[in-house]
Length: 343
Ligand code: TXA
Ligand code: MG
Image (cartoon, rainbow, N blue to C red; front, side):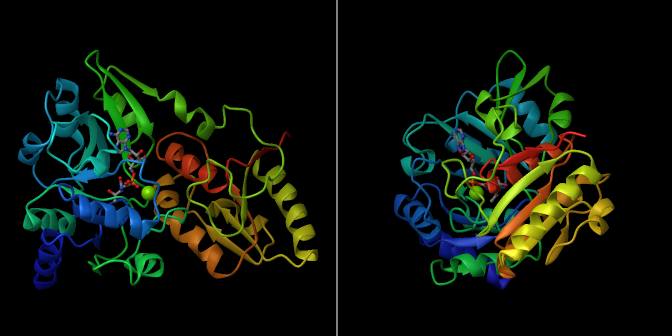
């Protein structure tokens, strides 16, 4: 408890502190303090036009910085908070640092479902802006040591709460007056779950490129593409098709890569691990329990970096439930390289 008090005090003084949530570790700052928020962007190396999510521990905190919250937003909070759902709400002017919202008139807010996060926010007694606590372009951190790897020496402290549960970030949504929910980022709360509360759930058109419905890219492209966000150091490609066809293709490509002296890795579901021949094969858990894949994904990507893998392949998964969030993150990590193998 003592270390939580220290962390809360650091936040109040305008320092930046990493803390666990149920999704990934966040890098927190007092959302009203521009200097503190700027320090978050600097520590991460994050472009300042990408707004941050504000975390609260009690819905009463909302009144201070939002207004005209509609009925559907309230219903979603009733159902999913605390939990991995971020709501885009109308911002009350002159309340939060403009750096948090990147000058928008809306703010993304969530109440994390983690006892340490809730205690820390309550003790700091202010809205906490917190992006994932990774260097920009690295997989999000699901353990305190991931945070240490990326941000050691750049932040005031880390509250260690052990490994996070969900493993991928919150779902970001906007709830409209007509009963429609728009998903801006798939995450820990699934479209199916949202559909139990909202009359209609739709994907933001901006997600088309992540869903593979935009023209897919047939061959690996150079890294550093515009849309790469969660990039491992090696070149990752996602492969979709029947398990036998996918593994035959991947093993062929890996053999060629190995002959060129590359170090190879595969991310596959536990049902198919035995099919692959690579320097390392990481399990995303069972296809029947996609929560395992979400939980393991970022650590697996970091492991690929640790072993120095330069050529990586990942199996695609169905988009039901958490599969949507897993595919969104895999495709981002792959710079949208996906190969569809026909039978
Ligand atoms: O699970 C999570 O959400 C984690 C943990 C730490 O809570 N946080 C997180 O924050 O992922 P960050 O900053 O890495 O992601 C913020 C996402 C971005 O996709 C951003 O574009 C979107 O939320 N966002 C934030 N404010 C927004 C706004 N006003 N309008 C639209 N999108 C917004
Ligand atoms: Mg992030």
